[in-house]
Length: 154
Image 1 (tube, helix red, strand yellow):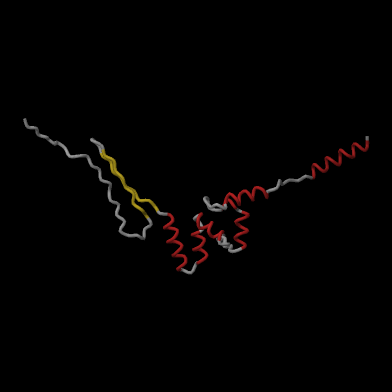
Image 2: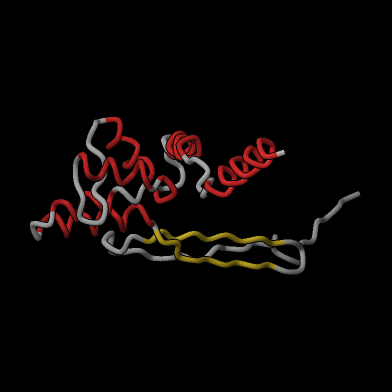
C-alpha cells in the first residue's frame, strides 16, 4: 500500500508595505502592518510625525540663528523640559519674560504650564488657595448700621 500527498495551494501570506525613509531629516516614522487569513489579506502603512524630533530641529535652528531664548522657549513646550528647567531654578521664558519675571508669570498663570509637568497640579492648587472672594461688602455694613440704628430708636 502506498500513499501520496497532494498540495493544491500555497500557505497564505500578507506582507506589510515598506515605508522608505531614506532621509533622517524629516522627523517621521513609518509604521506598517498586515493580517492574512485563508481567504483575504490586508496590508497598510502610515507615516507618523515625531513631534519631539520636530521640536529639537526647530530649537537647534533657532539657536544657530542666535535666538537662544527662543530656542529654549520651544523646548519648554515639552513638559519634561519645563519640569527640568524649574528643577534647575531657571524657569522657562514666556512672552519675553525671563528669570524672576518668568517665574512670577508662571505662578500667576499656572493653566499655561504644559500638561504633564509634575509642577502643574501644585501651581494650580496654590492659585485656588490664594483666590479670595471678591465683592463689595458695603451693602452688608450699611444694613447692619441701619438695623442697629432702628434698634436704638425703638
